[in-house]
Length: 106
Length: 263
Image 1 (cartoon, each protein chain N blue to C red):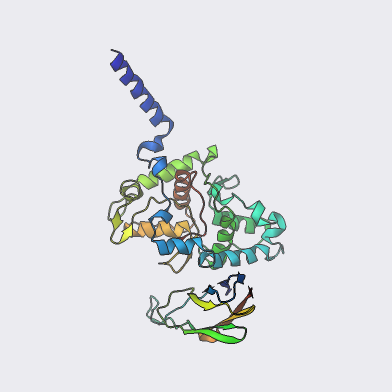
Image 2: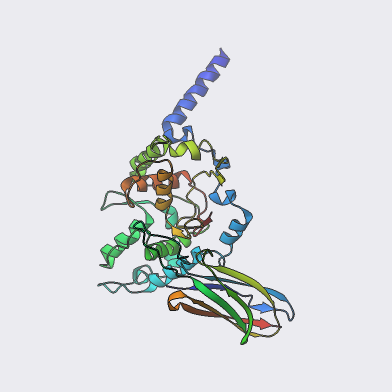
């Protein structure tokens, strides 16, 4: 049951610096741990996160082992036009999740 | 003479007070009670206060979906009987653990959800600490956010609160510590780098950064019992429910924070 929490201001003034907050549900198993009987727990992490603003990529990050479960990624951008933010998380074992949020720029 | 009389009256009053509420001997004064929230760093507080930064909200969202989904043989969803949780579940978590007449003992919120599944949905119980049980519990408890804890007022609960209190005071384990030795006598000090809190269970189930997950009050209690190197109880054991009940009655009047975040 993967789900994301997104916080993008619904309205902003043209040229305003806005904060975007994203929280994605994921176990982020680093691949370094062993079970009680010595078997390695295979790595299962999100490897990449991208944000597009009306189709244009404005933020991208790679993720690695040792990033905590349910990664919380926040960043800033300048509100230039009304439209949509598209978020994408890609990870091990075919993990792929998307979410989006709209903004009205006055 | 008059002085001696005053003392005698005072002694009687104290004696009456002790007889009326045997629990108040080492209790933390009402005005000094503090949620674990107040012991946290500003960053962690900010995480709890922002619903888009609080990872506990992921479980609440899943819980809301489960609340509405039809399950098992009866094909009934929680919402089919209880309707909108925002009104029907408001204040419910603040009254738990509560007395179950059929079982003749108190049950906590997780157990109530599983009893409801068994009795009304003909569904199998969800395992303790499983994602679905934590999600449903967090969703139900979140409807009581901000509402004052009101557990333990049912007169039938009295003997169970007393048992929970006894366990709280009981020294046990290789370290020979009782809960009270830390949480009544030494709160606001530190154990290694961590704050010793008052053990006020205001935000369960809560997201613990150390767990990287949402967990129940029983998980926390079992952690503590292991920490004093005592033999812990199984999930759902009557002893743990009684301890939960005592802690909730001890925190009466403090607001529910579910889903809280703790370090």
